Image (tube, rainbow, N blue to C red; front, side):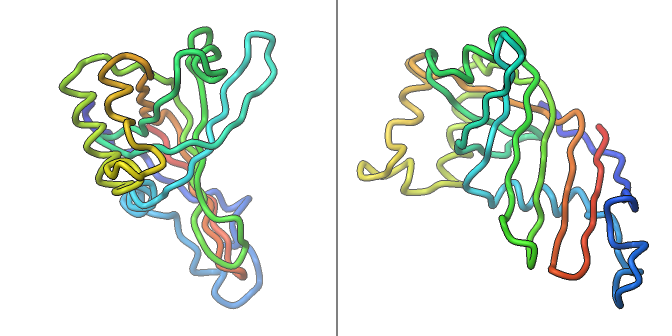
Length: 181
């Protein structure tokens, strides 16, 4: 995938730009490069998919940002795999659960199954770089991750963002950035 650069805009309706607190007048949109840095450093993500009857399914997972897309894996029989087979639209989120610091990121897009073995190997290497011994060590909680994908036991998906959001917060000043691809 060729990484795309988004149009970035601050949404003042949900930012502190109009807030009378000191420092709020300096609120700016979060640069996409910073959002990408946070995606590469995150360890836990949440995925939202849609069941055939329209109900949502939300579950945590690990994901790796590589080549302009967020990648994740799932077993063939898992609910998210079943949901994506019928409706590829999904959202992946990561961030902090604190108002005093952090940047929460939402990626919206369509999940595309990665079947090319060379690309799978690239993405598996990105997971190994991001999660280290959790994947690479025989004692790691996700050991065998790459083998499951290579053998076809697990499915690998890529979500290139159509739209993304960054919600910055430091306890006093809040920002809401929209990234349009």
